Structures are given as structure tokens and as C-alpha cells.
Amino acid sequence: MVKFSIPKGSKKTLKNEETMKKLIGFVLVLLCLSSCVAVKEYEKVYINDPDMKLSATPNERFEVNYQVYREAAAGANGGKTGGGCGCN
Amino acid sequence: MAVEAQKDSTKVYKKRVLENAEVDLLMSYYKQDGDHSVVGGGVGSEKLNDVTPTIVITVPLNDDDVLTIDTGLSAYTSASSSNINPFNSSGASRKGRDDDDGEHNSGNTSGKVSGSPWIASSGASRKDVLYSLNTAYSHSSDDRNLIWGPHVSFSNEFDYTSFGFGGSVAKLFNEKNTELSLKGQVYLDVWRPIYPTELHEYNQYGIDFLTSGYFSDVPVIDQSGNETSLYKPERFSTVSGRNRNSYSASFGFSQILSKRLQASVFMDLVYQKGLLSTPYHRIYFADKPSYYIGVAGDIPNYTSSTNTGVYRLADDIERMPDNRFKIPVGARVNYYLNEFVKLRSYYRYYTDDWGITSHTASLEIPLKVSQRFTITPMYRFYTQTAADYFAPFATHLSTEKYYTSDYDLSAFHSNQYGIGVSYTDVFTGFKLYKFGLKSIDLRFNHYDRSDGLKANIISLGIKFVFD
Image (cartoon, rainbow over all chains, first blue to last red; front, side, top):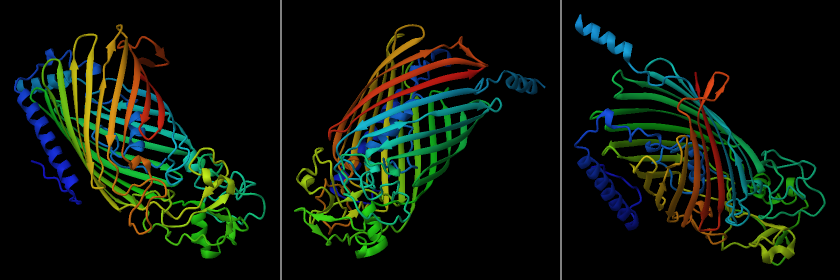
């Protein structure tokens, strides 16, 4: 299990940390349990549909950019995790 | 011999990672308005326009290697940042003099000087252009189950330069049903700080700044509208460091769950150190007297957009801790309902040690309306708690160590609604010189934040493939 070290140990932060750990664990278990049977290459016609990509489309990046500017949260979406002042 | 022949055969029929060079022409136009300007300490116009022409060129170097060059610019005009010097439209820097460049301009000698957080100033800081260049190289193993590569990035604007580098590796397992990825990035950024005009002059001339330099003979008035020489932002000092470094590690896990369902989970660990505040964000303290330049009659309406003639002088600039640790964790689940309908969902939980937690959820539903056209309605919900250091306009106390009135760090929620239209021609029937048109994507989104900020963004992406 990944151990998160959060310098500021307020009760609220610790509660959030616990919630996050449970969430990560739940999703990982769900995915692992479901991955027992491999889908063959010739069965991936639906999965290979362009709309099924697990990444953002090229011009979605602009929406991610302004969300990074206007919101405190960033990352975990393929967008930038640093660089640039984001100050306008 | 047989093994060698088989190897040769593998080499001959190895599918190229990318068959032909591709060119993506991208453009977006963003427009926003709100009434919590951070340069005005949480009050004032947030009107902003931004245009971002971008080109992405992806070139196969051989069967296994791909080079991506991504370059563009972001040209914006901003009412908020124009008011780093709010006085220049009408007085202190008239005849083209302006203090945004950080150089000394000798003073104003006459005329009525005024400004307003609700009106964009004409100073140099009203607009800027960000230039960026990102280059990435990737190598795929012969069995295409291992992909790795480095990347570098550079961007520059008037007061900020960013240099980044990193690398990524992805491993596919289980007949390419499972993928694990790891990405590391470092950004080494440098500020060239600019300060609100009155603080810049105070720093340069000390208590004589109202009789020397930029503000010479410009009357400062108190809350009652009486002329005074008592304004002394003693809390202000220039920032001690100019660097901002960001270090991040990203982990990804994606899994095909059935013939119609796939999902991924990803997490970033981000650590930032250095100057994390913005040097031109004003702060007004609740326990300090108020001083202004401009029309005394507008002081009672200061926080209303009817104030067109008076600007309050800052007590200090935003102060934030010099380090921040962020943990975003996200998941995507995509489901192929049928030939005409797919579901694309996304969720992210975020926490950091500035006291912010947030949740993001979005859903896109691509609807195939013909062989080549897809219409995609989309919705995104976002909510966050406030940073520990946030307080609204003029409510911070001068005894606090850290403070900001940046509403991007306040508690709010937002809704984003949009629609996308895409055209795809896998046969690239339409040709332009030696390039075939592969796809056109057009997206429009409206953003509505609970503190009143509203924005619209339209983006266009056109992909060509080199024949």
C-alpha cells in the first residue's frame, strides 16, 4: 500500500487521506478482479474505437489549461503538473 | 537457420508504430469575466481573452521511434493584470510612460490621476504572449509491449520562464489488456517579479515615494477623502527568491475489462518549492487604514462596478508558503454501448497540504450520427474547499504569516457544459498538397463558477496525415 506523507497533519487532512486510500484500494481491487480474462486482439474492435481512448483528445488540452488556471486542483488528467505561473 | 528466418520475417512484417507523419493544427479562444480580480485584492474586473494557435508535428523516425514537436503561443489581454499599474490610463504614466517595465519613470507633475479595479488600464501588463515548445521522443520495443522516452519543454512570457524535462515508461501485459506506466517530470521555473506600482515605488523611494518619482505630486486620500501623507505599506518587502521548482511522479494503470469496457487509474505526486505566490497580487488588511488615489466620491462604491475613478493602495502582496505537496488521483471508465453511443466518464480526487480538497467528475457521450460525424454532449462538475490562507477582500490581518485573496483558491463549485462535433475520414479523401485530412474536432464549453466567474471556450483541432 502506498504510504502518503502529508506534512500538515490536521484532522481534516488525515480524514481526506483515509478516504483517498480507500478509494484507490477499491478501484485497484475492482480492476484486478475484472482482468482475469484477456480480450484477444481480434476482439478489440469496440475497444479500438477512437471514442474509447483513455486519453484526452488533442484540443481538450485547452480546456484542461484554463481549468488549471481557474481551479486549485491539477493533475491526474494528462495535463501539466507544473511549469508556468498560471497567474492570469 | 529457421530461427533466423523467423526473426527476419518478424522484422519484415513489424508494423510501424506510426505509419506516416501527422500534423495537428490547433486553436482555441477563451473569454472570461468575473468580479474578483486577484490583482485588486479580490475586487475588480476579471475580463480576460486568450487565443492559442498551436501546431503539433508527429514524425516516425523509423519503425519503432516517434518524435513529437509541439509548439504554440498563448496571446492574452487581461483587465486584472492590466491593473498592476491602474493609474496609467489617466494620469501617472500618461504620454506613454508606464511602470510595468520595472524601470523608473520620473514623475507626474499635474493632472487628475485616477484608476479603478473595474476598468482595464492601458499599461503594458494588460497583454502578454506566452511562447511554448515541447519535444518528446518515444521508442517502442519490437513486441510493442514496452514504450519509453524522454521529453523536454520550454516556455517564456514577460515575467516568467519555465524549463522542464522528464521521461516516461509504459509496459503492456496480458495480451495488451493491461498497461502500467510511470512518468517523471521536473520543471525549473524562474520569475522576473513585477509589483503593484505603489509598492514598487515605495520600495524604491521609501517614505518619500509620494514626493519622488512616479507618484510625485499625486494626492493620496484617506477613507474620508482627505489628502494625506500617512500611506506607508511597511509590511511590504520584495520577494526573496525567484525560482519555482516542480517535481512530479505520475503512475498509471489501465485495464481492458471486457470487449466493451476499459478503465484506467492514475495518480500524481507533485512537490513544488520556491516562489509559489504571485508578486503582483495585492493584499488589503482589515486592521490597516485605507488609502486611495483618485476620485473621493467613488470610495463608498469601491467594491461596486459603479466605481470608475478610485483605486485603493495596497498594504502588501500575496504571501504563500514556499512549498506545496499535491496528490491528485483520477480514474477513467469508457463503455461502448453500441455503434452509435459510447460513454466516457472521469473522476478525480485531489488534496494538498494547503488545505484544499476537490472532486471532479465528468461525462461525455459521443453520439455517432453518420459514418463520418460524431456529436458529443459533455458535462463536468467540480468542487473545492478553500486554501487555509484564503480570505476575501480586506479581511486578512497584518499579523498573519500567509495570505491571499485569490478566488481561484477559495471554496467554490463549478459547472461546465459543452458540445463537440467531430468529422473523421480514415481514407483522408481531401488533400492539401501532400497532406490528407484525417479529422476535424470542434468543441465549445461554457464554464460557470459559483463565485460569479463565467467563461466560454471554443477550440478547433484539424489533423492532417502526410501521404
